[in-house]
Image (cartoon, rainbow, N blue to C red):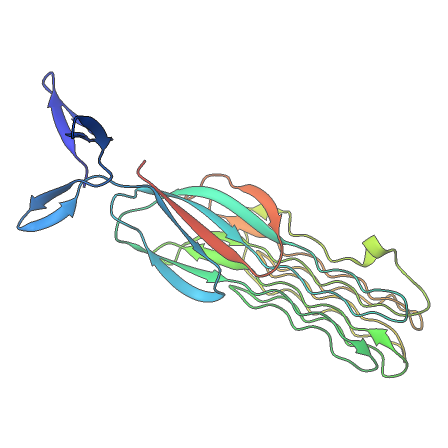
Length: 283
């Protein structure tokens, strides 16, 4: 509900109201009018909601808000396990998208906030880190060889999403991939074993889970990292192949925006679990 005044024969919306109190003009933060026996606010104060609790939830568009700027973050991948003095690859970062969408007061938007992929383990026959959950889940890291000591792959990060009241997807923020696990013979560079950041965004496709990393295919060795969830999810990392060698990191998930509902988003990266911020706008 807005407050309007008639000036020179034309109605104009009042964006600010001031009153004189003890000889000083002061701005009103809230103005109420009585309509049908009920007091209702007629000015809207800019507000925002930041949500970091993982899992599914809803948010109601407040009175006076007709647009919203949404920042949504995907989750990062887990780190690969180590072998001897060789550290596993760090997990890739999740995507962070910011875009503006038209909304209507009192309607309900739904969202899912992702969790990060788990780290890989070190030892013999150890399973990889589990993939993070979310709108779609990251892939699980591969398992080490059954002999010796090597690192399993990190799990891929889950994707986060926000949807309109009719379940139309507005945006999906992709997850980073899991880092590769180390062996102790043939090696990738540290950057070559590090998980991939989610840095690509499209306006088409289908959401899907990340793929699992490949298990060690020799008696001793590391394993591949899990792919990040996205639109679509990323591929899992492979094992290098030779005895007691490293696993490759997975591929990051791709992000998505609905070009019919949202402005083209700005894109950056995010570490840890996902999250979402709603900044409510009057116009």
